Image (cartoon, rainbow over all chains, first blue to last red; front, side, top):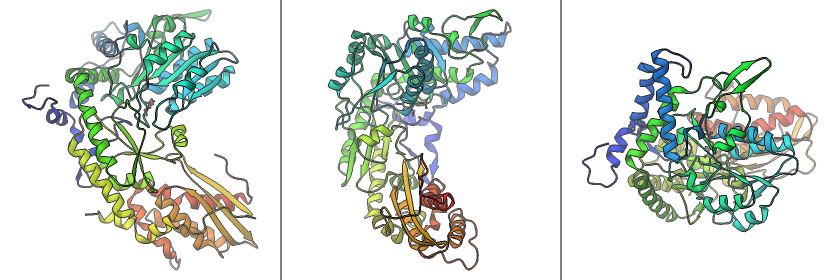
Length: 412
Length: 150
Ligand SMILES: Cc1ncc(COP(=O)(O)O)c(C=O)c1O
């Protein structure tokens, strides 16, 4: 990524890397502010994926033939990139899954079945995405474990006192998001993990919204499990990561059975392959795993510190711009926030806001963001959400503000 | 300036019904009711009816939703009061046709509801306009006041 731009952050170059950003929507330039739902893909990732199919494709871990080896090497190189991205100790701790949702289901099911019994407690927070709630409800129903919930305060932060009072020797698992997709809140994870460990509980972190916005270091955090999705870090959909500490993964039974996850199979019993393959039954999503590696390359080339600085500037600018709009109320004002702004405008329903913005080319998410407990907490049916990425610009935030003025114009 | 299609969607009459919904609230003594959700956005509407001798003598609704869904419920209520169940079912069909951009049968007077025809240019909003209508349909079909649990 060479850029002659004197701008410290090469935004022009970046924008030209993302072909979709030059699309017109209803004749207007696309202003894509739905990055919390999914990010767009740079040409480097798009080309890498088609490149796999063009000259590197075969099944992995199976053939003695040349292409099988090439595909296997590429996929394992991607795993190594992921390892570096989150600073895992070993590639054995990096499992390719379909996405964060599958990663959480894997842990809830495999770890849960082996470790939870009636009366054990699982602590979640009120700001979890449904994908970090429902898998735990399923395993709680199956084992008799009990779910406890950390509430959110008015500003959008977790009520840490309540968290501490919920922690006990009965707590077996604390499953929390790193960054709230509905509020933008960055959770004080390091502290929470330490306190959980002090009482003997494990911690699973939903890193979906953190991975694109923060420098994630699973060793520094001391997370036991950490999940995230490729499609939210400029990579393809259908691929994601479950990180788990090796000793924990070693002790867990397989989640699914099939090819690639076995050592030997016989009708008198089978033995499992080594990590990470024990948890990768069946032919994996080869091309997208490789593409996710290229997305990580893209982020690394720019450097997360520069991305974070740029996104923080976008967040402050957007916060200021939106706060200046009469009747607009930002939902979620935590001190530590990622570049996500949820808002409501008086009685105007977020759906109507979304439709009016859409016709100006501005894409935002409206609805409950798969976080219905958060909506209940703030007593709103839904919010509108602008979530930013490394390719967004200050001018786009101006467009958002102008479009929001149209909403007011229509609704008077 | 505002795109023409947005003007078609957010007409004054629709905004008026959404801000001042008619027949909003719970109906004491309802003989039929049903609730519908839009799981996509968390909108929900409950429709309450009094049906006597196969005629809808009263109709109210409780809605939590966008301007389109509230306006549609409000206009539906106005339209349906005093109609026979058979007429109501025909109007349901005609309204769905209107929203989907199909032909409305000759001789059917949709009155204010006509203003919702702009929704057809907004496929993501069709569900909003039809939510209360599906609730009405379910209430009539279920023939009782059990709420559709969701
Ligand atoms: C915080 C959070 N957790 C989990 C998910 C689920 O991710 P996926 O659908 O990629 O499995 C999302 C994505 O919407 C999210 O924002």
